Length: 404
Ligand SMILES: Cc1ncc(COP(=O)(O)O)c(C=O)c1O
Image (cartoon, rainbow, N blue to C red; front, side, top):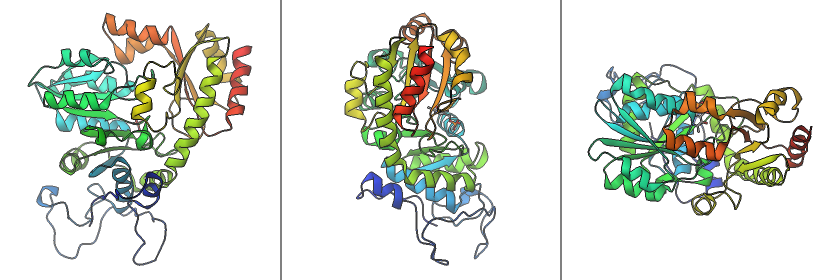
């Protein structure tokens, strides 16, 4: 059985199609089939523990390895320019695998002040569950990161760029240098960027985490997660966390997500073009007081985003006068856009994130970081994940709801 391989000589659009796939030797099928079998017939007796196998182990049981999941792992490793990739049942399972797989009692983690709320809550809970202290910092502020590092104790730095929901941009190369200086591993949740915009491994990041439920799957119909990185680190997660603890990805979802991945490069181009048009529209709307989108020249991380990203993706946030009132009305008046959580689907999704609630539940930041959050989000933001509809229809609908 072959592990995920990368195909570095092809460009991203070709890799998205080719990588991980092979013509079925029995049927000649050109596109990957779904292998749903739990068990695999082996040609000779095998051991009963994954620890007794090397990387070339045969397929034995789908919780260990599965051919359809491997198609997806091959595509993602190739797109990320990583040696290897392991898939999980959700982005949160991938997140938990990294945290539990590389932290132990007495360690310390430095994490972004604002990133995906579920990951933020999980990192905070590590103190009670495995005695790991965490410190929150604005990872776009490198001095603040360095001040928070406890040499010898800080084993992991966790960041997300662009960050959900404030769209802050972190300089991954500079942060990787800092992590190396203090012998900590740098992990980035690159769900919003996708490998089409940014390839963190090329910038010195150790592990890249994705929620595959977003742009990579792309159709809002399958939950999944992945971690890409060196063969050694990923194999550790595969043979410890995935086999024994964190949720595996079903082959059916892997098939759906791999199918989505083949069109990721073209979708990301369309997502980014649409988002730019919507962001520019919102920026000039009289009711909108602020738009946060890294593609806009006035975004504080715009220059860095231009250097670090090949496109700006399609997540944006905006503030309006009397946001709570609009938030109440929005679910009842939208037609093109859905009032729903999540991002990265072909369908545009919008959601209201009230600042007081976000700070009291997901983030629990200190005074200084809370002030930084408020200075960007005001009393609340509407997070809009721009989809693949015609952007003129999106702008017209937004204009209608903002003007009444
Ligand atoms: C940036 C980011 N990372 C991770 C996750 C968690 O992913 P999942 O929902 O697949 O567990 C999410 C979910 O919204 C997310 O937005």
